[in-house]
Image 1: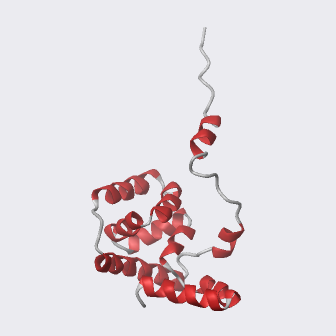
Image 2: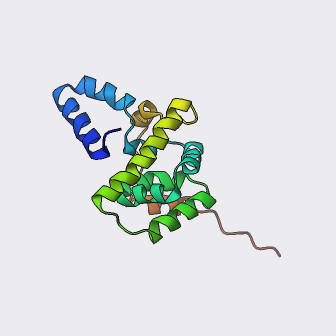
Image 3: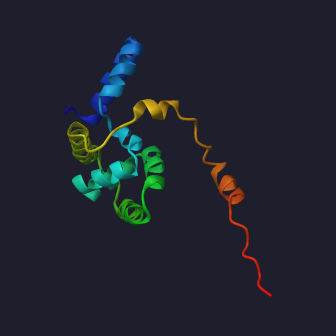
Amino acid sequence: EVPVQLQQEMLDAVRNKDAGLGKRLGKRIVTIDDIAFLDADGLKTLSRRVPIRSLAAVLRASTEIKNRILPKLTSGLGQWLTQEIELSSDMAGDRLAEEQKKVLVALSSLIREGAVELNKEEASEEPQALPVASAPQALEDQSPAPPEEKE
């Protein structure tokens, strides 16, 4: 229930003092960055529990989280959330912290209820994704062949 910034500072301090303990705590403590570890169903569930504007504010503030979440979403929810992000304005620190807390409380509650799962361990073992600069080329290489002409 502490502010997100303080939570991150405390976790970083523990990691600096004892890396093993910091790693174990990092797996147990739910942080705002953990939104990125949700699958599509978990994101849908979270979007039903927290106001979409709060979720949009959090994603607008963190390009990294936004870039990891939006590709997972179905077209409807993804478009809605993208539109909310684009239409929202940047928030001041206190207001953003309040919105982050709403999302974090909802996420923590969903995890305790068993409605969503975070797979932090699997995420750290997954191979790294293509760098952003390489992604368009990779998409071009996978484009479908042109349709065959009929005689």
